[in-house]
Amino acid sequence: MKTLMRCVAIILVLPTLCLAEGATSQPVDQTAALRTDDLVKVTLKNLFGNGTATVLKRRVDGDGKIGLPYVGRVEIKEKTLADATRAIVKEYSDRKMATGVTMARAESADAATIKSGPIARDEYVEFILWDLDAPGKMTRKVLQVNGDGEIDLPIAGKVKVDGLEESAAEKAIVRVYFDKNIIRDPPICIRRVTQAEENTPDEQ
Image 1 (cartoon, rainbow, N blue to C red):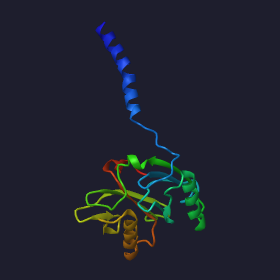
Image 2: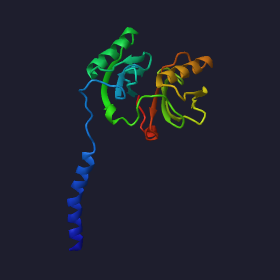
Image 3: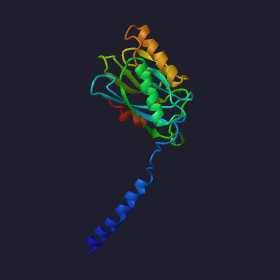
Image 4: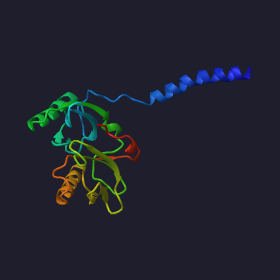
């Protein structure tokens, strides 16, 4: 009898727990205009070969822009997701690079765990580089900024990023690979992340 009562109690409690857990997950608004500190999920189709789909998370910076491979910074602030998608497609089209683009807001500015701003010591940054090992191949690492304000890049070694905005850090890293004659003008993306994101990589 005691066993039966315990089973009944578990059955009654489980739905309550599920509801409580589900209640904390709020849908992210996909209709509002994009703002600084919004985190967007961008999927680039066929950019690195037919049938490929490269999924990137980009944060809208203080200038209202996001960084994307090959085209650099694209302004999307105050645009709807549909208008931002068209702006990105145009950037690639203007460079004779045909790619399909889809976008979604992954995190709103109000709920952002990381705000736009300079990289600081002991922070973590997501580093994405293409074409290092083979054309179109993506190299992704989550790197911690050391006490000297540096991150340790694959093959290229250390580069100082402390105090730099993400866009400036990207330029500094491109310069390092160029100066060391490793790769010329590589497409690079840098994003400040939490340590927890180390195990949630972007996909290609």
